[in-house]
Figure 1 (cartoon, rainbow, N blue to C red):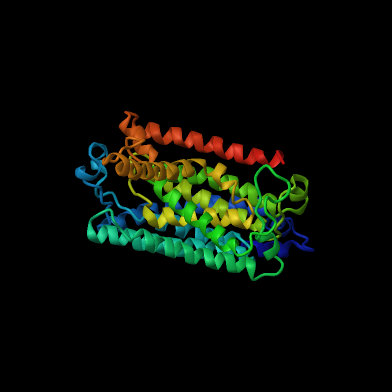
Figure 2: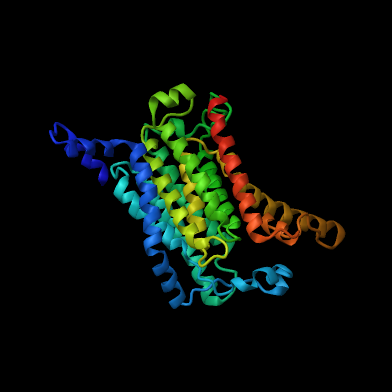
Length: 377
């Protein structure tokens, strides 16, 4: 919306109207989107929290029988309002409408992803709150919802003759040429794996106060850079990465998410006054998956979102090892004291805020490493 103000500067005589020329630059609008989302979060944060409390939307905490000693550490969190992801989604959407070019179809693809995955997470949170347990929707239902988003994303690329050839290619972070020039029908499956994996990985990371929100900031900044680079022909050619004309505008949406995550972190930092819930975590994860697809940096998401990946892998390793050892020895054994891995460190004696800050540090390092690969092709 604000982008179109730069037309007023064309042929203008006054210095004020000439200054409106700045609205055409993606870098300016990206920063403005972040600041707008952050300020909106501060303005409406307390109101959202009060509303969630009045609706008695409190986070259910797993029982002592389910999580043993962890319940002693997290018992005080019971009743803290959840579904705070609505604050993140709302501020991102408003900021995007204000600062992004709305004639860019990829922007609307990201908006669709946020809304669709957010509604899926909202449904999950609602069932948890209404039934007063941590079950929510089934894993199958969650995967079907995420798969439906993947189909829409795949259709966006594969039904467009100008995009489908490059969309079918698979690029590696350290290679100039694609690893596979044409994934064929497996492209849809690959997109589904990226979106499902990313969405559920962020969801698993959201277990400590501010952990997922802080990692969202670092990952969002990294992909704001990656999308900006992918949308600039000269820079993309220089760095020898895939060029998508529409990708640059997505950096505005990425920075809107960064600002929203910072604003949410204001209320979600230890000790949290509100949790984002699946409403926020599934939406953020799905968002990162689609952004990675839009700038053809899907495999780099494993590096940039390293903390999310480690969290998801810890759950996969724990479950697999438990099932295998139960079949072999008749009793399941564990690799970690508890998964996701942030709970393992809690049970090892680390304070919650220590785990959070150290994971943030690791996330920053992963993002820097991911951005460094731009010069290693």
